[in-house]
Length: 404
Image (cartoon, rainbow, N blue to C red; front, top):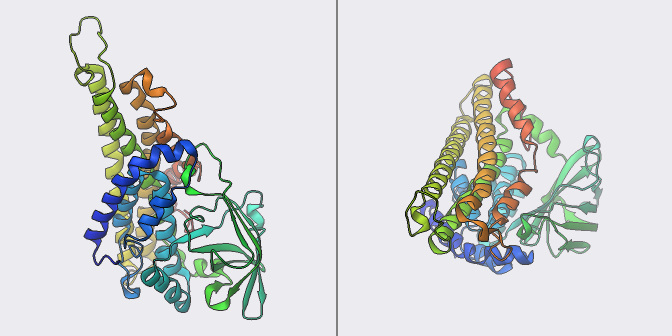
């Protein structure tokens, strides 16, 4: 199945999200990877959403990716995060850094065979100053991969995994199928939130990757891109979208809970028979919805500025490009700061509107807060606040990097 335009893809994503919302609570309670839901997503025809048009994909903009992530995360934030990984790897990362032959192969797999991309990048105990412990050792016809990864988000869903490790003194990347000999995906992810991402351990025991699916130095490639590198802002606005989507899901469920379950409490001096007429509940819901709407608007504006910078790369001078990238990066940081704090507040304060029974474990209403809190630790928020301060007070542009 293939979807031919962005509008249809977004409509499909909205429909899928509605279905995912129905199973999210139970999946989270059991700590399950949502296999049936991910299989449905993979067969829906939206996997080419972010693949460039010249490779047969829909070529979605940063704003459209943000919209998709918000929608999926409203249904199940774990699915939103896994789809973000696929979008980032399947377009932004590979399209920016990879040689043409590698891109053509991976994109063809996505478009023609509904191949889903997971990752095996972060490690648990490596020294970040020295790089990764996992190694890509050159052998005849390719590289041999050995080591262990943790935080392998999307690995359980992945038909192929993007593996990052050290190739000599450089950071390298390889694309390997999940059934590669010597590759073991361990379903041991056990965190308080984002339980369905399957972000556990991936073990590589002399896994072979052919040369056409290997980059021996993504470090050099990213340095050459310099100010045209927008991978960091695109990644971070994606995380921002997950926070907003999760908070929208919490607000939606909270409103439904108040309508269906919250009892009217006879406050002194007030006379009402339904919780939806309680002035304190009305005030709480109204305030949270306004704050969340503001955070969402900031996210879309930041994504728009990223798209402005992306569109300018062909014609802008290096100086103009640096200005555009800085403006986009700062706007993304501002949006992420607000979305993180607002998302946590919405997911926390919704209990005030719902009442004491909403705290029962069987309701599992805290899952939204746990998901945002867990993912918000991915990168320190203080880095964002400092970066914005440096831009405003010191005229310092954020440094281009793969994640920031």
